[in-house]
Length: 178
Image 1 (cartoon, rainbow, N blue to C red):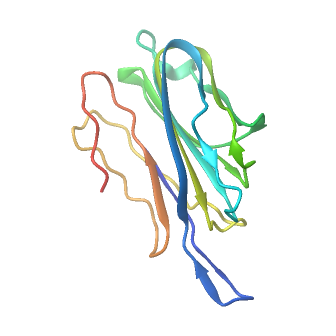
Image 2: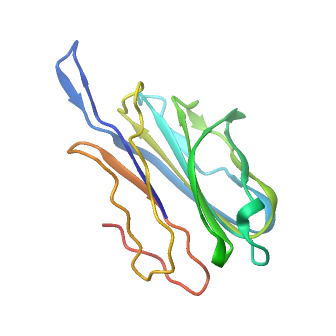
Image 3: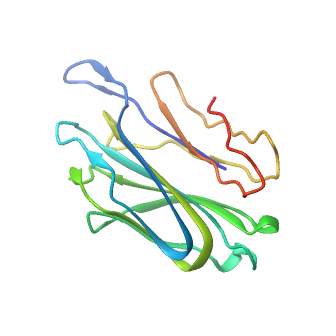
C-alpha cells in the first residue's frame, strides 16, 4: 500500500490558490512478463503545471521480492523519478510509485520495466494539472500487511489531491477509496 498526494499551491502574482485537477487516468496489467506498456493515456496539451503519477504493483509468485525491482518507468521515452516503494516479503509482492513533472502531452506510450519476470504486474497512471512544480508531492505514507482493510494517512491539507495505489494478491478483493 502506498499513498502520497499532489500539492496545491498559491500563485502570489495572481493571489490565487490552484487546486490539482485530474486530467487523465489509465490502467493495465501483464502476466508472466518483465514489462507492461500502456497506450491509452492522453495528457491534455491545455493543462498547465502537469504531474504524471504511476503506481506499479507486482507479485513474483515464487521467491521473495527482495531482489525484484521496477527497473524503470518511461513516458514518451522520458524517464520518471521513483518516489518510493513498499515491499511485502511474506507474500512476494511490492508496490512502487513514480512521477514526472510536466510530462509531454498527447497519447504516448507509458512503459514499465521490471528487473525480472513477474507472475503479475498491475499499472495505474494518473495525469494531474495545477500542481505545485517546486514541491509537487508531499511526504508519502506506506504500510504493509495482510489486512482486509488496508489504509494509510498521508499528511495533507484542504486543496491537496491524495493519490494512492494498493497492491493485493489474487485471493483478495479490490479496496474502496476513502
